[in-house]
Length: 472
Image 1 (cartoon, rainbow, N blue to C red):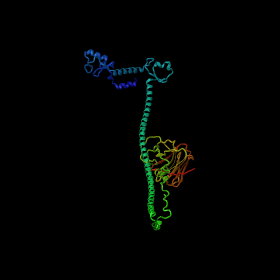
Image 2: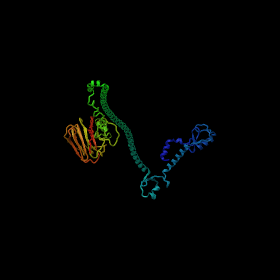
Image 3: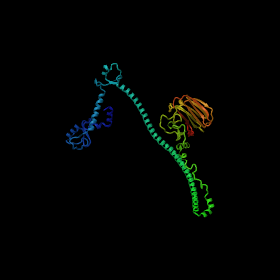
Image 4: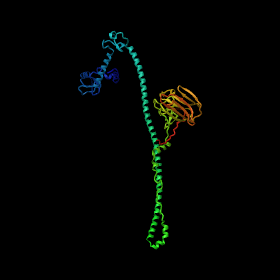
């Protein structure tokens, strides 16, 4: 057992617990009596021989046992403790020369005796007194211990942070699930209403055309009855006598003209249901009608990048400043600037989005290079225009700033063309150019929005044009 183990055992067992009450020495072959008292086996036997009775030396209870039972736990404890003390008593003695270890060899990093110092193995080595070397190393270990303790604090803080992040992820999942279900409920409602409208249109056409055919059938039935009456009257005339036939000839001929009696009945054109109108490109036409129900925003905001003082809308298209919220310390989040980034970064191509800044007093719009450390200053990778103290400025690394001669703006269009190395800003209402940065963006860039106002900045939806053209 190590010295540390010995200290633990000493703390667990008091000194009086490990000593025989008779000889006051550490137990040797301890035995235990029914009364739970323990004694050395030899001490108990001498006591019983002297007293002529098998009584407990402490409580005087008479034991019916011939001899006490071996207390194995106590025996092992005493033997281990004795062995450790023997080893400890020998630790400061040189195993080679039997001398006390009074010196510490700095070259071999081990304690030695005075005889070892003069031996060939330690020739020309450096030595320090044991107490001095121990004091120095104890100080070093204490410094190391402080470093380890500080590291442990960091680990504990990280553990708490990671646990909080895990809970936040669950909350994110539940919230996102609710939003997905809400969006699908709206889509389901739209599809149900669209289905009802199209079935109603089909039913209306079916009713109208069925009624038209029914009216034609009723007319045809009346004409058939009239024709049948004429046929019956004519048959009666044919069965009459010659004189009667000739006397009624004029009226008979007027009733039954020599020309075709009736026009052949025909169905009008378009009497059948317009199936093609109802089924043709049905899915496409429903999708086309969806443009009034859904919207498309060229960029959406990434809540994982938002400064804790910003509040984003459920559809991630508006942002405003509010009370500080608690979020995980994830690497993507912006700390020093009250800003948020778009969810998608760009490395090539042309991209455009519009932001409504009407009645805003302080804002910034632009792009941020993805390689910038987001916990600190963003200016080294930030290109933007801003409104501050009623002045519009264009700012680019390294903190190059220029005033812009523009009036109050309501909507701003940001045009990013990475292939042409341009970032341009326009008044979206008048299509008037505001400013253009020319730079070769070698890293991924993200849309950037900064605000310090409670009135929200809004990314405007793009117009959806759903059309189809045939091409050979």
